[in-house]
Length: 202
Image 1 (cartoon, one colour):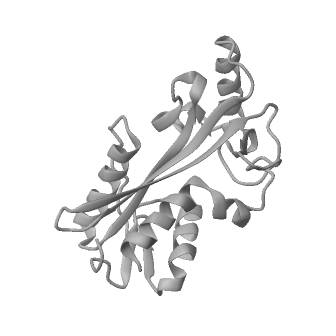
Image 2 (cartoon, one colour):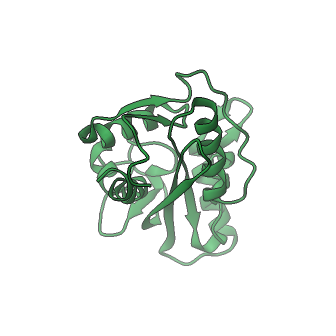
């Protein structure tokens, strides 16, 4: 995919935090990063059962609609003792009639681990799959993972989602206790972006 990126890239996201992170990572390359939301694009239905499948849906829909290269990600928490759940359904585990409640979702994960009598440490990993799609239909895939274990109760109020209950390998802090930008340097998304930038931006 070398040479296929111009000076403008569309981030296939409606999440302002994710857009900010992508723009920050690409700032050294002097690339103009737009968001699907700013361009008025609807979010396509994520109907696949894999991270790469859902990321491909978002990336290709955005590239086709804008005529520009588009970058999408799909990510989630995979817990070993739960056969990889919640996985691609990570956000769904937090859904309520009032919106997403990740405190409830974290408790739900821990209760599921108790139900199967999962031994300690309760191993898990955050997974991120990036897909860069160009309007002619080609794409490239970049995968990053961050390994660790789960703690309960969760600790810290930084980050988002399941961060307070996830302690990365080699650290005594949970992702919820880490400075946001420190976490971003070691995260699953950072690992995937490193591969993306090596493959497409250098």
